[in-house]
Amino acid sequence: MNGFADRQLDESSFGENKALNAVQAFDAFPKTKPSYQHKTNTGGVWTVVLVCASLWLAWTEVQRWWYGHTTHEFSVEQGVGHDLQINLDVVVKMRCDDLHVNVQDASGDRILAGQALQKDGTLWAQWDAQRKRLHALGVTKDERMELSGYPGFGEYREDDVHDFLGAAKGGKKFYKTPQLPRRTEPDSCRIFGSMHSNKVQGDFHITARGHGYMEFGQHLEHTSFNFSHHITELSFGPFYPSLTNPLDNTLATTASNFYKFQYYLSVVPTIYTTDAKALRKITKLQQGESPSSGSDGLAQHPKKHSKNTVFTNQYAVTEQSHPVPENNVPGVFVKYDIEPIQLTIAEEWA
Image (cartoon, rainbow, N blue to C red; front, side, top):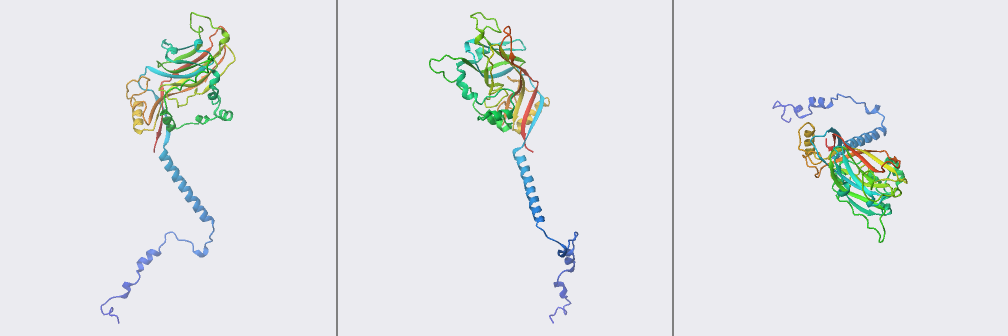
């Protein structure tokens, strides 16, 4: 009727394709018929939980890549160093005229640190406000937090590389000594400044005039001895006052006239960096490439201080302080030893 038959055409060619229907109907994983299924809300909850967990894992991986991870690597220090800068800021409860400050190293050289450092007369009571945030050496972090109630105790948390780099950008000058009230005689002495010593084992000591070294002059009464002190700064290498060291902000007091404060320091050259290029240079030097010598023994390349790299020194400290008989020398003694290793603390990105 429609003429398809006359032209030998089949209407089935315009219908559904049986082969395509068979492919669409094929299911390699047959499913249970809806009539045999029992739907609950638990499945939806688990789906939401798994989606949230997946998003959290993805976010943590992104954060890990974004913030990087910190690595600590020890190596033998390369190069030959000759000089070591020592930075000191301490208040001793004795008059400046009654104190001597000297440095003597393993090579036998003696440095009259009293000439390199500045001495300012002050009052012990003038430092009470600062003394509120001081702590005794050896008191644990938790004990400091319990005893404190003072601002500034957050500095004892573990800092990351960015914290150190940020602190190194701060001011690099010692603050001024508080002025004495009028018609007031100082009862204490602030000793501060930077001095250079040989980069070998040595010690510097603060002793009373006429005790420890032969000196002609008036004898100093033993009743005037009092080596109670607080240390605001004690560091090695370039002066970064915002970096916290183990002896920074420590207080040590005694009622004895003959008392010997002894600190033993182990100094480790340390590099902080977030610069991948600088880290590659440091790694090459650690693998045996000979760098040129530096004034403080640290490699010349990369630069000792840049936006993303800081060369400094860390140290560990132990204390052995005790009263001494009158035939011994009282005072404050700091013995330091330079370790032949170097610590590189770097932040890297995966």
